[in-house]
Length: 320
Image (cartoon, rainbow, N blue to C red; front, side):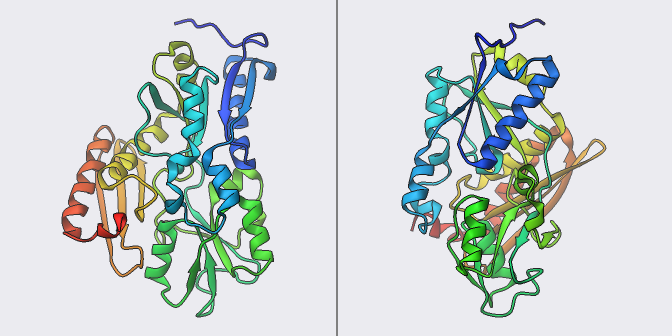
C-alpha cells in the first residue's frame, strides 16, 4: 500500500495541548514518524491548542477536576479542530482520555508504553511509609486519593493540580508534604531526579492506561491511518483494549476511583482491577487471566462482576 507522505508544503498537523509534557509527547510522535518514513522535521507542524480545561485550571486551580467537568475538558477543543480539518492527528495521554470518542474520530494508534508506576515525590520524605501521621499529601486524582485513604487513613489529602513544574513549586511553598506523579511523565520530561521512590504496582495499582500515549485521527482519513499504522505498538494496544473495556464497564470518567493494569505473558493477558469508595472505606479487587485476543471481553466481564459485588449504593456518590 502506498500513501502520500507529508511534505514541507503540506505538513502533517499534530494537535496537542501546550504543557511541557504534552509537547514532549507530540515531539515523540513526530520523531517516530520522521524515523519510520525518513522525513524531515519540516514535514510536520506542531499545533498547540488551548483547551477549556487548561483555562479553567488556571482560574480554578484549587477546585477538583470532577467539579470542573471531567476529562473531556482537556480534549474538546482539540477534537473539534480535528473534525473541522484544522489538524490531522491529536496526541493524548491515554490515562486522561474518556473511553468514548466523538463520532468521526478514532483512537487506534498507541506508542510503546512507558513505566506504569506512580512516583512518590517529596522534598522532605523518602517514601509513602516514611510520612508521619497527619502529613499533607496533594493530589488531584480521585484514584490516588482513595487509595491513599485506604492505605494511610492517618494522612490528610488536599487538592493539588497543575503540571509537574507547578506541583514542585507547590511542594516548595509548603502547601503539601508530598504528592504523586506518573513515572512515565517524569521520564518523558527527563525529570526523574524529583522521584523519591517509585511505587510498585503490587502496592498501588495505577490508573487505567497510565504511561501510554494515544494518537487520535479522523475515521475517514485513510492517508493518516496508514501513517499511524506504521508506528502503532500492538502490545500496548492489546493491553489498553482490556483496561479501557474494564473502565468503560464501570463508569469511564474521572469521577470514579478506578485502577487497572493489563500485562502480557506469552499469549496470555493478566488483568488486575480495583474500585474504591472515595474515602477509602471499601476496596474491591479482581485478578484474572485470558488469551490476549479475549482481553476486551475480559475487561468488560471483570467490570460487570465488580459492579455486582459492589452492590446497590457503591457508586451512588458519583452523582450526589
